[in-house]
Image 1 (tube, rainbow, N blue to C red):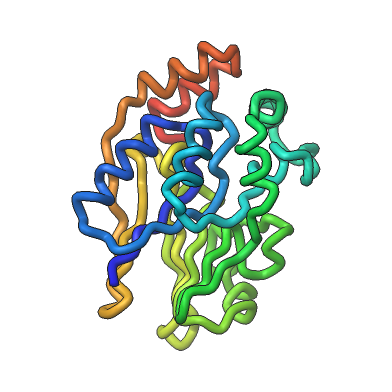
Image 2: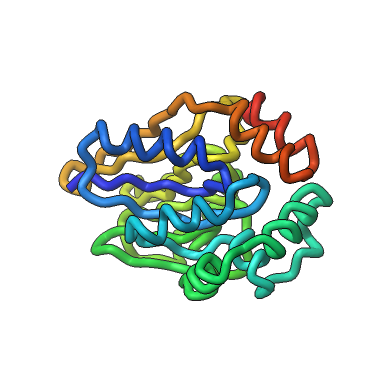
Length: 226
């Protein structure tokens, strides 16, 4: 079975549409979303509606949690806080209900899905290095764990060499200095995984941000993938 794993859409509808077109070309069997559908971008409801109406299984991200008033926004930087407050004010009833009902983790056979870290999923730990990931391997039993949150495609392998934590990167807010949207393709039969980068209409996504009077920095950073 070929699985598409997406994460961190962040209200970027042009990026989501481009990624879904790419997923369709790969002939995937199922799509899963690792959360943070909203935050930063100017089209949160459209992105939530897409995930919801396409029946894509999705888990909770920290921006999703904050946008529905369930999480503390004090630790967000000022641009993120402003975007969260705007998103919260502009969420539709359907979007709010959908995000409120999301769970922190999802298990599929030998696959564990979580937004940030399998260790204390609701604490939103960042996994940037192998030392960050060390504790996380003891927090799940499956052979592979897919994560997002840092917006940077990364692979961690445990000491046995048999188990992996894979960050699939970000659809709508890449942070690895590559502005192209990123998603992950996993073959459950062979265990093969690869990241796929997709060009999208960055200028259109930036315009969505500016038209909503969100911080211009959130628009300009899309151009540089940072």
